[in-house]
Length: 97
Image (cartoon, rainbow, N blue to C red):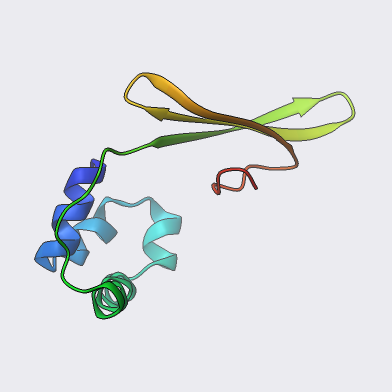
């Protein structure tokens, strides 16, 4: 699923489509009910959803060096780089951490 399709599924209450599009680890760790609860908490906190901005795509690349591991995070908006971070350790999936 594209990010837009994920958002459309969340707003339509079709969490099962999101879960079904995940890999095995995602499906076993994130249930449609959990997705429904997270979206419900978001709308309870911030109100009705009214729109989304342009997505930023994060690549979190694991790197192996002779004396340790690191990860290179590169964030893109369209084809433009909008952030780059080199961090020690394994990928985190959280930009800048």
